[in-house]
Length: 517
Image (cartoon, rainbow, N blue to C red; front, top):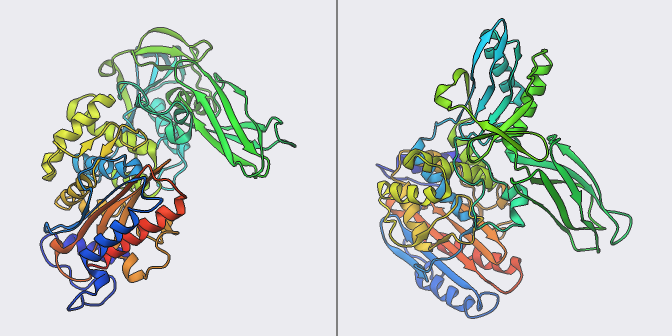
């Protein structure tokens, strides 16, 4: 049914929808619960009582044809959290195309003599966020390494006098946005990256509570191996019911990290995913180990490149050894490609993957401004939005691609204008495929009391962080044309109360909006 609905939406860009999810025509007259005034009254009631009373609540729902159904603080800019991914995935697909693939290249400096590379071997990143990950859409990393090795073999390289260098210079600037919390940047969801990553730039650490409260936890660094890192563990076993409060404190200035916080005594052992600030170096390490299986060794060891373009060796402290060769002066041996952008964007929104989202927006910046620094991301977005018919001059302050920054401020009105604009993009059929319906996947707990006839017509993205809960998306009409599709955004900031109660009220608002078509 999902694919049928999406197909009909696509056709409706120039025709009518026909009968959709419920299979029933719209009633001749709406009941009271299906009226805009009823929804507005409901919002007025809940916004005057806790947990919404102390919160900032913004709600907009309008048809693509321009009829406003609900507008409550619609132009108020709020923290969107992961609703930001609607914008980063949409812009990336619109600018780059749904079938775009990131490219990674293998090249070398110097020359080949008698099977010996008299120079350095470069792994030249092109922004691919999937390199080395274990998603179902990606080939196992050894398959990629085999292509690189076969290209070296065809060129006659049997040994390397120099280094294997992980080159991440394709993305300029800092790996993280400067406004991200220091506690966040050591987590899997706050890891940054440059142009060459590996395994989403994450390290897995197996942790287990100690025998008593206050005792050290058991820990084992699992995968990938990062032998240049020195990890310390200041963390302890916490009281029953306190959950997982472990955070790695690290950055890319030195190969050190300290795991701090507590892990509750009643928690089961688990895999803790923490940030790896040396993804390019990790990629070089694992490719060097792959080559050693075929007796191809690099006498100079492995290295990466820093933000200034210096070669940085994998020893402590990290030592720079001159400038890396300009990429356009390297001899290219092979190019490998990522999965298509539409598949990456689907995982980005399905799983709310921050690492993928950041890469997508930075790639838009690279395409539109020639630079991938975070300062360029907002500039690029402002350049692209008018091509979707979206006025960027009000309703949006965009600083990153994932929504991890609390400096992102976007209004419900802007989300509705953006979602409407995306319907005119050639990539819209693939874009809407990146969104889920309530009751499916990560939204299995959403709107449990509503019928499938309601839920199956809703396609949305969530956004959440402490004190923030947002949902924005599309509601397909029971019948009618493109102009009857509802775009909506429900955003709550700074609420005072349990998450479940806020989520229940948001679910009700969305269900009431859906009942209007």
